[in-house]
Length: 261
Image (cartoon, rainbow, N blue to C red; front, side, top):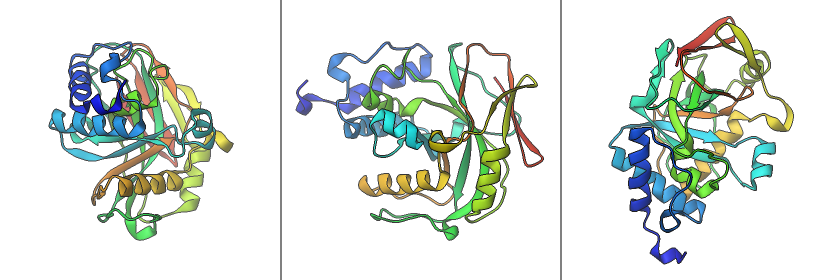
């Protein structure tokens, strides 16, 4: 495809149609398929604008050292959170269609101030209003999100469907807290243990992910806003659910975070 002929608005329009209907695509038509991550992010921005939602923050995926190495990525994939798809503890999430979803228990930060685009900026304690545990529900608009290529998956807003956000566990950067969460959090489905924390190269470092978001936003001239939720990638082993009717819960530090699907 001649890159000069790529029109990201048309790609976004098709993805938005499927986002709303729940129907899945095998892949994008050749004329609508982004070839680069930049084209994917341009399409994602247009998708989000066309959806007329309010941005509540950002999500990162494929952010562990092992994941980025296998995916030949220099930073995690980044998507945008729509406020209407962000929920509190105990929420019931209604899917647009009954198709498989991936459940990821993650660590998130809530920003306490605007972060203007600045190359090389690193997170500091004053940036963080709250640290939270979250559940991301990943439901791509593609039958197989791994088969379509990263630019298409980025255009698809990195498969974002919904986010469940727990209560604040404290402000600032608390490295021992992050380590305790990664080591002790367990995920249960219908009362049965389903997943525990990741470790080694399979684990995502939440602060490294946040720094990657700062770099991404700087490259695209985007100011991150106070109050934005940044969910940083899988803390526990992700898993798929193939039908609805489940209760999913995380147990951590004497607390729980629960939703039904």
